[in-house]
Image 1 (cartoon, rainbow, N blue to C red):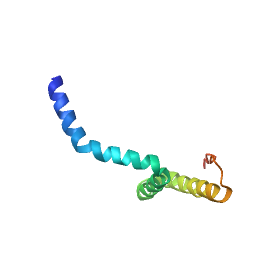
Image 2: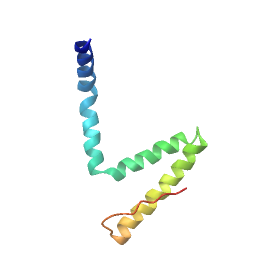
Image 3: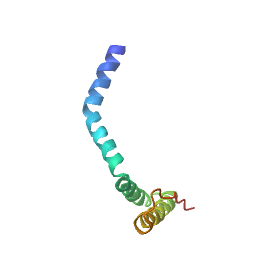
Length: 84
């Protein structure tokens, strides 16, 4: 039973492991790009749900404010913006 599980896990990790590691490493270096991708995904889901539309708008506003803070004020630590 354990050997079969290990074999299946090895197959899954061999197939999905490298792309997941690459995505994780890219996320560490470019988190703002992944945040932008998440906003676009929420925009696509906004056609299905009103809560996804609200979340998409609030995330986009927070993203715009955060990027403006970081570029205009040159802060070392950007404050977390929460839009309700």
